[in-house]
Image (cartoon, rainbow, N blue to C red):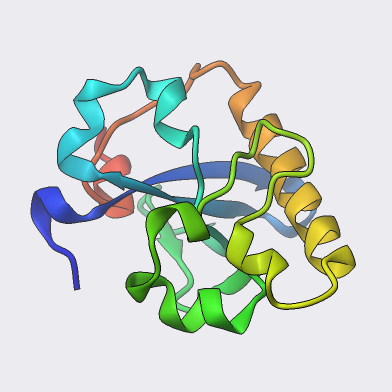
Amino acid sequence: ALQNADRQLERMYCFDDVGASCRVVLHVHTPFRWGDRKQKHPKARTEFVTSANVRHAWQKRDGSFEQEQGKWFLVPLARKLQQEWRALRENEIRWQWNVPGSIPPAERSEGPVTRAMSRYDDVRRTIQLGESLGFREYAETLSWTDTENA
């Protein structure tokens, strides 16, 4: 597992689900190293994406949030990308959320892409929503638990 500065740079988007009294948390992984994050403007740090998953977080009595341990993998859909991503070249596993129709080349090699395209478009729209918040509540932390103290 990657550690410290070699960890994968990740962006976390939190959306309040008022009806469920929880937050829906989208984790977006990038091919960039955490240690290199200062070399890019915050908006450029998610120019390329490698995967995304979603979890729920509930507010505890002390006001902090607890994130569920399980997660739902949204993209990639291709088994090759889910299981062998560390062994693949970066240009095979990355895609651009701000480019319509962009999906990883390795996703295309797995067969018909209709289902994959639809899922990537859903994730793309959710990232766009998160980015539209304009960094009003932006915090840079090493882990999601540190975010609560930022």
